[in-house]
Length: 346
Image (cartoon, rainbow, N blue to C red; front, top):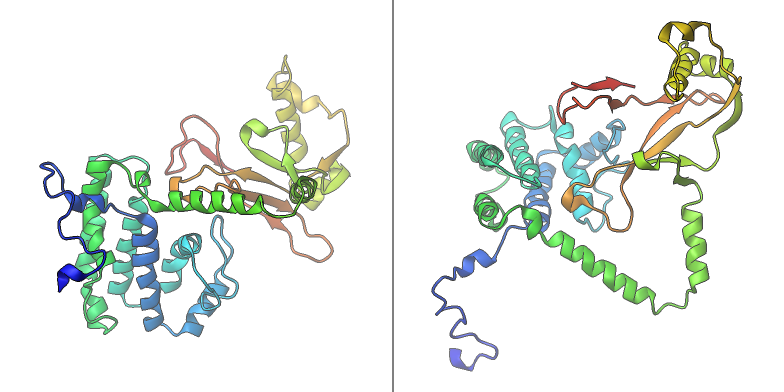
């Protein structure tokens, strides 16, 4: 009977390959196994622990934060959720669960999220691989609380089983960006979209007009080597320096501006001489912010638009509150990826 099944495979092609382990063909996949698998389960379990309306209220009340997406309507209003949305959700999840779920649940979720981020490292050594192993062990230590609370009868889930193979795959095949399907899916969308657009009746002139509209507000400034982006026109043109000092509450602005301009001179003056110098102008243009390009984090790369963030320094105007962002500036070559050594607050 089984021989009559159409399309049946009765003898695999790899059976006589002496050095072939066919199970290694199935490699780890950050997008589908971790974000659309493990993390998707985490979000569903959160809805078992918290009322949907309560979770949405927590999301709405969360303050704006650098590099973090603000879910103004909560998660219940989301339709089809892709990998990008899952990543935004993962960045904020733990902040909403503090004080809302038992400690064991929080530690289990924390371990899983730590594993997800460690699995995306662009390079590894023995130490970072031990971090991944430790995160996985921490999850197994606290996972029983998920069953004890009745959220699940068991954790026999294929996506969770795949976690134990990540270290093996990294050792055998290198970092996960070598075999993560997200990049290949993005290529598929990109080239299909490009082919589809070629069949549209939109002329090249219309496409150029749309691109010009999108780029009308921001253009690359003279600081292009530093990847800064300014608006084409200043927000306040020809503004008196004394008014700037008052509006922005920056009493040392004039002195700092003199010091900075002195560093740009071919023959700079001595520091003591600057106290007796005046600026050769009294008005300057004011920009209330600028955008800067961020370094791509491997599988987070966006092939259509380079990821940017913004810094604002806008005084109170017309009764509207001002906005002055705080940034950590890498000031010297001693700056580190963690900690504040070699940096200054601006």
